[in-house]
Length: 449
Image (cartoon, rainbow, N blue to C red; front, side, top):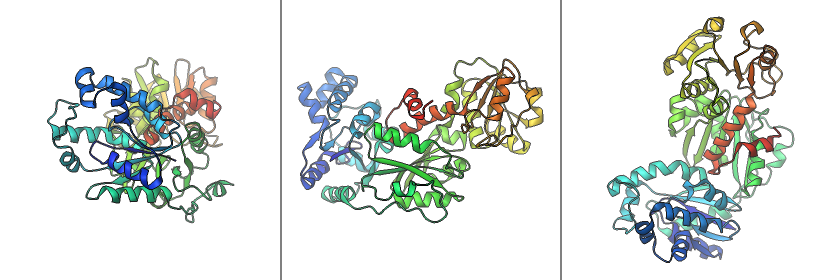
């Protein structure tokens, strides 16, 4: 067994870690102690003589040797900001986040000889760093435990109970759809197995379970990813909470509902007004949006001034956000011009109905509706709307060649399939959900692209 304790300084990682190690009859390591041993000086002296960059380099070297360690590890507060450290720590291990409020941390660390990391007063620095590091802590954690107002032995008992308790077979309530064989695969998970899934309706066409389960295996994570296909998002989130799900990928039609249900959101999800990623930590839900990265990355380097987004939902909002970040002048067109105007008003761009496409004369077209998905033979644009010099990006990825892309190719357009968006948003989403950075080549390899 490998148990890794993460969290901000003052949350009790070393004290609680030693207690957990004794209860489980495992060896204990503290990465800061290993760094001091390697450097031949205490941590404050390392910072004073060589700076934080040298400390982080030593930290990475020390953690690199712990991939196959079996025991309990207490890490420094900033260790999981480095995705490579997270990759090593997650291999064959369970990562436990110890949390405390800013006030509790300030009280516990008062008088510490640790050097400041910012130019802020000590109390302001704690609040600022807790806010900055929280997404990294949540992404890297399998188990979240509050330490405020609790003795270290109580926290240790809580962690040990969660690690060794029994979990019932994963059983979704009535109304959830699963593909053949999926229920049997989820029948008897280990209590430490992290659960993740795709939330949508429909969702059974999603390739996310294939991708995530392969990546979990590649990185030695004890985790499983499944389907949460149900016509009611409240039921999806309720089931996820009851099952202890750690992360949800969110697809049509729940991206706006996912943002509304979250306790906090990153600035991209807040600006877009939709979330495609939820990370759950106890009763807390954090939302983020990686769709916009999936739209932006394939278009980087495409020189253009005018772009059209077809659609007015959550995916369309992410597309507008991405296109504006590239400096394009964007027009939103939809079958319901009223909805297009509402979306466009949020981003300060133009709007209209589909019949206005010809007058816009865009160089880039992003299709962000479900039309053309899974055998639907329709397209929102006619052949005469398209021509050489246009770049047409269809966010639908099943099938890879949609009716729109087939027409665009025949008309001499440059085309970008929705699999490109899926690949790049998945790279970013995997980082948000696990703290591990995966490159697009690895994702393409898994997907057979």
